[in-house]
Image 1 (cartoon, rainbow, N blue to C red):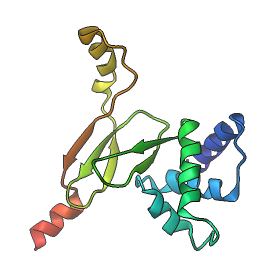
Image 2: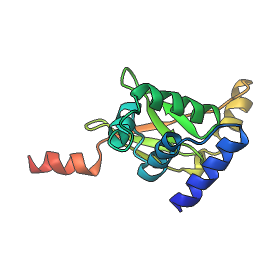
Image 3: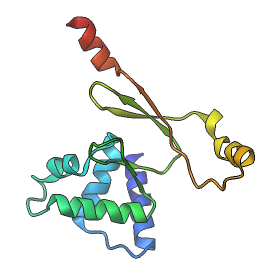
Image 4: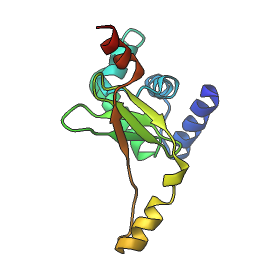
Length: 146
């Protein structure tokens, strides 16, 4: 499944005139396979042994290219570093307040929220985002053990 998503993403980039370098392929693959909503620094650290000449700036620049192509969403939460999400489906996020882990979930009941918001307010809605906060199972178990 990941290979199909990688191939599809590469085709999207090629269609928008983006050259596929080994670094771009590796960053894209990392985002798709790990689904951990990494920071650019985390991606850099994961790939630096494979690409010793790659810099954090290279990772950021490629993430911007992916963002412009509509493949990646930049998630900003407060003052912390941006996290990046391979975004091919509409979904929401639940965030652990203890460790910062972000997990995707879908909730079809919210699919119409933009239409309702437009109807109620008269706004033209561009998009929406929702985050749910709590404690992940790992952190909850650690708290219980300690």
